[in-house]
Length: 121
Ligand SMILES: [Zn+2]
Image (cartoon, rainbow, N blue to C red; front, side, top):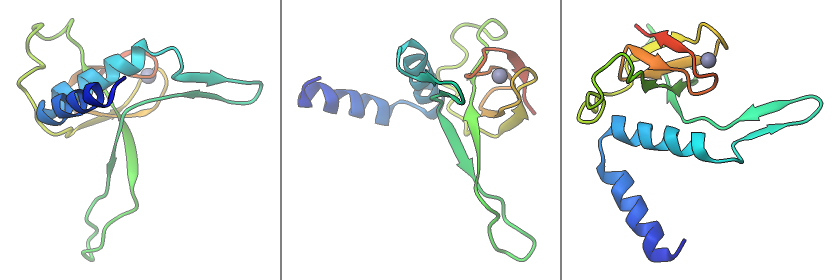
């Protein structure tokens, strides 16, 4: 990739809304062949995640937690629904199959780790 191509890509990603940005990154990760590794003891998979803190009763912030950003399940929504709905990722849950913590701008989602359909709240 040339410096010009890199800058064009960065500008495009910086200007699209948050939901579209997450969809593009999740699709790119899914198409890469080098996002999973495995040996005798461990298995890894690259994912796009959101870190979050919660305000405690005493005004301090909790420890950070992370949730993988799940794309909207376009089999559930209309095909053009996701783009143009750049809401923050305020829907949360846990994947029913692989148990990773998830967040999304949509309630009906696909897990970025195992592909399972999940309903977030
Ligand atoms: Zn899963």
